Structures are given as structure tokens and as C-alpha cells.
Amino acid sequence: MNKDKRLEMFRRLKQANPEPKTELEYSSAFELLVAVTLSAQATDVSVNKATARLFPVANTPEQIFALGVEGLKPYIRTIGLYNTKAKNVIEACRVLCETHGGVVPDNREALEALPGVGRKTANVVLNTAFRQLAMAVDTHIFRVSNRTGLAPGKDVVAVEKALIKFVPKDYLLDAHHWLILHGRYTCVARTPRCPECSIIDLCDFRSKSAVDEKGKVVAKPIAKSKAKKRASDSRKTQTKKNGIKKSSARVTRKNTVKKSAS
Ligand code: SF4
Image (cartoon, rainbow, N blue to C red; front, side):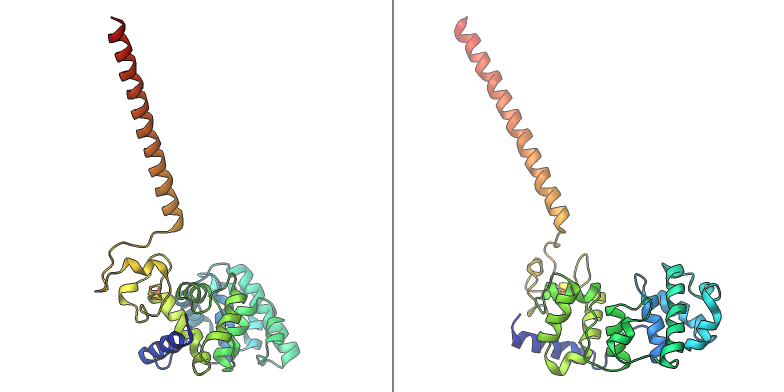
């Protein structure tokens, strides 16, 4: 994807959604930090349900630390990996209270030093709570960046660096939200909704050619594994057919020999 297309892509994404926001519900940097920590391998909806129960009771590092691991678990039991997450959140609260005066730090090093906080969580907090130029790459952003050709990369760090380099500067601050929402609702993992995609003419994804000029899907893009299976099935069928042909040729030859002998 070239520079002009990148610019046009974000112009359109912004036009459709001028002020994109995270779907996680929060009202402070600390609440956001907790919500993002809980959201690993879980949906935003499930996290919002849990934090809607938790935050009215405890929404500061001191209050959540006072709950303790066993006191926190009932609030987040509906979220995957809640045992580990409960331990991490309580430990992070302890560090925040002991080292940062109960305030969420606004720099990567200090954030990543908190238990349960990796590069992605730190990037979300830096970008969303502190409005810094940081790019969190999740599964949706990774897919959209590679499919469209916007910022291809083999791993999340490579995609993150490519996005920082290639996303037009005016759009960088909100690019994370636009890309995540585009991946979540349009450029979905299994069958991207190319016919209704606002950037179809800018996107490099090869299988979007499965859409005709009127935007109708004429052949669904098939997953690599399915394509492989189909190819192998067709090879097997071909081999079988060839086998039948060969054996019937042998029978014909035998009959001819018999006739000429008699
Ligand atoms: S055209 Fe299809 S593959 Fe490309 S961004 Fe849109 S939905 Fe994704």
C-alpha cells in the first residue's frame, strides 16, 4: 500500500468515525489499566460486565489491594484465566501503592515493570489514557495491517514498528482504535466483509478479488488449510481415476490377446 492509499484509508476511517474510542469502559487511568489487564484472551463485553461489578466497590490501587486475591476473584470469575489475573492485579496494585504513590505511571518502563503488564497493555494505557504516540498491536490490528498491506510484519513488534512508520502522522494517535474496530467488525478473521468495506479499493488483500464489481461475493476466500485439503482430495480422486483407467486398459489388452490366440 503506497503513501496516498494510506492517507486515503485513514481519511475514510476518520470520516466514518471521527472520535474512535476503546470499547472498554473506564473512568480513570487506573480503571483502564485494570480493564486492559483483564481483557487478555477475553472479550471487552465480558470485561465490562466484571468491572461494572468491581469498580463501584473498589476502583483505586489501595481499594483493590485491600480486597486481596480471594476477595477480587468473585468479581472477575466470569473472565478467562481469572486466577492468574487476580494475582497479577493485586500485585500490580501493591507496586503502584508502594512505588508510585497509588498513581499509574505514564512511561513504558514503569508500566511494563508492573505484574501482568506487557508491551501491549502498556501501549494501550500510554495511548488511550495519556494520549502518547504508542501503538498496541492485538490480533485484529495484526491481521488488518498484514491483509491490507498497510504495515506488514511477521510478529506484533514488527507490525507495531511498521505502523508507527507508515501511518500518516495526523492519524497516528487514534489509528489503534480505527484499526481495532475495522478488524473486529469488517475485516473479520474468517471471512472478511469485503463487499461492505469502505477501503476495498485501497486494500492489497488478494482474496478480496472474490468480490465482483457490484460488491457481491462470488467466491468466498478459503482458508489455507481448506485449500490444501481440497488440493489433496482432488489429487487422490485423479490418482483413483487414473488407476481405474490403467486397470481397464489392462483388461482390454488381455481380452485382445485371448481373442487373437483363439
Ligand atoms: S477489503 Fe476485505 S480484506 Fe481488505 S480491509 Fe476490507 S474487509 Fe479487509
